[in-house]
Image 1 (cartoon, rainbow, N blue to C red):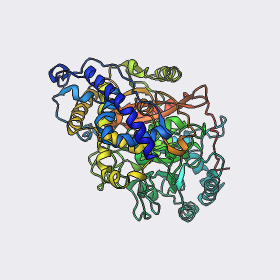
Image 2: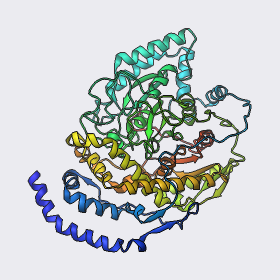
Image 3: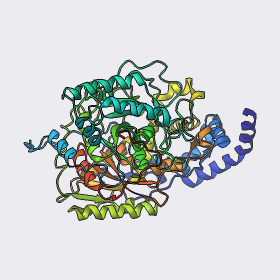
Image 4: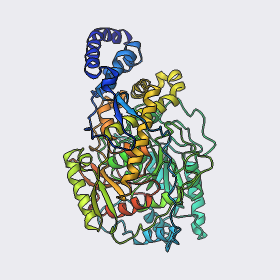
Length: 612
């Protein structure tokens, strides 16, 4: 195999060198001629979004590319060529004078202390009491309310539910197409938590609205007693003895942790493709021959398949919101620092937020209200304002201004655009006004976010790259090789762009309450047979899937994805709402209305009713 690779490389070398030199001549001149000055505080003329270009690689060609990328030929010719073809060298042509912002942490606005007429607990009670019964309008996902109704009525106990879940966990990976949503679980641990919850309900003293509710956490979090593998085969060699903060808070709320969920290896992709021996590829419950999205792949699959109504993920480039959209469930990325990331692997310290994946917006609000608060063990979000659910149950959306950049909004498949445009009209009919806005320098945002997340991941994973290179998936090796191409100057310029983008958003949010976009530019892609063996690398799809996600990760603003329909192929279509820093409440208010737009919820092909 090595000899074959070297022979192919030798044949390709002259052509690649010629192509590279041609590309260099086209893209470069004198530094003075190509440097574009950016005036502080003034947006540059809109630059059209460029689609990424790179062939989808799998099997032999992926092996060849990874081998080449990590040779002198790859580092000097192949990867620089790929960067230029995909506009990743854009930052090198910009002259930005703003100081860099390395962490998108924003101070809370000083507002008048309103004596809230309704407490958060009152709003949650109202959400649960007013949510329609899941069986009243055909199929719908079983949510927190359904579990609570069973526990309170005595129809089922948490212990009985836990036994049902264990039976499903034993069954779902034995089928011809294994679900692979939950990759580690322990019968004794599940029953221990469930029996404690059953006793509390028997004594009429549940700890919270999450008491007895099944939940799972992405393998990126430390969860006792599971292995903290983070999607790899080489990390987490010993069982964890300490919980991540979110796991600890869920236990304190009485939730039943059913295990840890599958993920794209080290969070390096957006498909969920992870062919290694401990994980395998999780399947989209709606179309098992399609990807779930990633990197919180198993979390979204577990919720959509009915294994649990709540899962926790991390989101550095859409990793909560993309799989939520692809799997037809709700995903919330909190403001940067809003929910503690302590106890998760710090793969990218400036782009990652934590958030829930749930069956409904109401469930996301309940989980958010429990998890969102400062954590002395986590350096970000220590001065955040109190998390509220203000006006979430308002009867309409009167008074809200919804911002839409129509040029950006339309950068998606026609089928998705058609449904999303109708969703905007629906929100408008509920009393909201739609305001056309301009999101400046989005091509720069795309490239700067990619530079930041890849540089930070490569920095953190450098020891692993050196020591465990052969144990990593091929796609991971390719992504980290690409990350090694960025310089300190690239990284600093990207963070100067962050300062500009955050300033532009501050100005936009003085005129609108939120920004609307489709969730993803396409629906979930198909799984190829070769993906099951070697995985795949598709830079074009990765960048397209993150198109509407990167602004939130780059600047730290919160985003909510809500399912609004289906493609003609039966794949879910999602819609995204983003708001200013710390204003998750307005997202949840709009989302609660938005999920009513989809009049029918289709039952996934793979689905288990735990409460039957």
